[in-house]
Picture 1 (tube, helix red, strand yellow):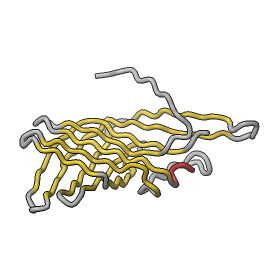
Picture 2 (spheres, rainbow, N blue to C red):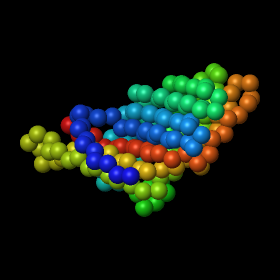
Picture 3 (cartoon, rainbow, N blue to C red):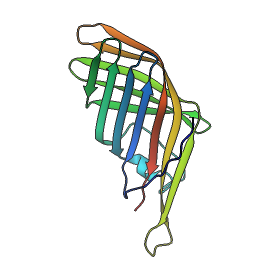
Length: 169
């Protein structure tokens, strides 16, 4: 499939890690962690990407709909740890939950698209840069553990994940 996407950027944007995945049984999983931190300096104060665990989260949302049981699991306690795979590809190690469940999943990118925004900073001879990255990705295995110890395991989820870095003013 393909599509056209128009991107409008409100400045200054936060950085984020996001993913949305569908499974063959009708289940879906999504996560969003927006934050401010060291990633804002990438391609601005220094010329390389340094994606790490977010410094100060703004949102930490996680949601899973398990189609076979009709159950939903939602929490505001998510941590995404990015891992470079080389060649511009990344993994997102997503984990989180609340008092009733915990989720662990690894989303792995297999392709990459990047939109780069650059803007001069007033009359200064420097620019600010922001990069938004989108990746077709898959989740080989997602494991949800309920408070009572029962586990739900989903395999072979397909979807998209995103990350961003830099800042633009």
